[in-house]
Length: 369
Ligand code: CP3
Image (cartoon, rainbow, N blue to C red; front, side):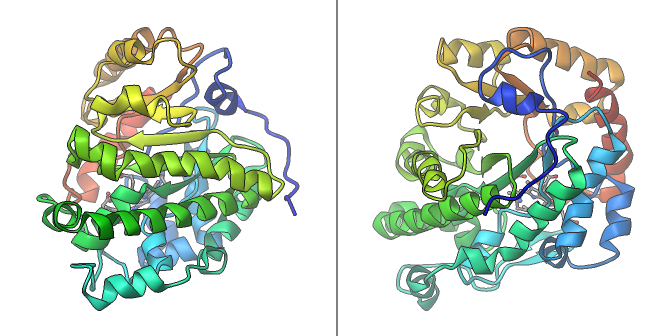
C-alpha cells in the first residue's frame, strides 16, 4: 500500500546519501523548523507543542515553513515532531513545559518500581499510537509536491533512556548513570525494547512517505568510550540491521539511514561499520580528521558547523563553510552540509527572541549554495 507522490525535482540529498558523485553538497539545517521563525509562533497559535505534533495539518505546515522561507536553498525537509513521542507510545506521560523543555511526571527510577514494569510489559502498538506522525508525513509529502525529500526520524535508544529515567533534560545524568551502572541488565532490556519500537516506527514512517531517516543520539557524548560500546552502539546497530529487513518484509525500498551520535567522536571509526549510510558529526571534530578516520569506507558525513556561528557575521559563516568544504573533500561526494547540532549550547533555556534574529541572519547566508 505504498503511496503515490509527485516525482522529486531535487533528489540531491538522496544521491549524496547513497554515496554517489554529485554537483554540489546538499544542505539542510538541524532544527530548521521551530521557534526562530516568526511564522512558527503564528501557526502554533499558543497551542501546546505535542498538540501541534499530533495535528497532521499543523505539523505539515510547520515542516514546510523553512522550505518556503528558504525556497531553493534547502535540500531536505524534516518532519515536525519530537523524539519523545516514543516514550509516549510506550505509555509514559511527557509534557512540554514552555521555555523549560520536556517533563515526565513519572520517570523510571528503578527496575522495582511499577513504572518500569508497566513500560516493559506494555505491548507497544506504534502503528496506532503514532498514527498521527504517519498522517503528517503523508500529508507533508503531498504538500511538498516533490520539491525536496522528506526526512523521518526517531531518538536513539540511549538518548530516549536518558529522558525516560531523568524525566527531562539533565546536566548530571544522575538517573541514567544509576541505571547503567547499578541496573545494567534492566537498562539493556529497556534499550532492547526501545530499539524494537524504533525499527517499527521508522519502517512505518517510510511506508507513510519518509525518504531518509535519522536516528538522533543526542546524548551519546555522556557515555565513556566503553559504556558507549555497551549501552548505545549495539542498539544503534540493531536499528541499522533490522530496519532494512523490516522494509523488505513490508515490500518497501530501502532508504538512506543517518545516525547522529553527538559527542561520541571517539567512536566514529566503529560507527562507520554498523550499517548506516550517513554519520552526523558535531562541531568538535575537524572535518579533515573525520575524513581520515573514514578512510576508503563508503560512508557519508553530515555536519558539522558549530551552531554558534549563527551568532557571528556573514564572513564568519563563510569561513566556516569554506573550511568544511575543504575538509570534507570539496563537496562533490560524501558530505551533507549541516550544523553540528540543532541548537546552541547545552541549555534548553535560551530566550526565543534573542535567537530569533540571529538565527535568521545566520541561516540565510549559510544556505546559499
Ligand atoms: O526542524 C526540525 O529539526 C524538526 C523537528 C524536531 C524537533 N525536535 C522539534 C522541537 C526534531 C528533529 C527534534 C528532535 C529532538 N527533540 C531531539 C534530538 C535533536 C537534538 O536537539 O538533540 C531532542 C533531544 C528532543 C527533545 C526536546 N524537544 C527537547 C530537549 C526540547 C526542548 C528544548 C529545545 O531544544 O528546544 C524539545 C522541544 C522542541 N522540539 C521544540 C521544537 C521546535 C521547541 C518547542 C517550542 O518551545 O515551541
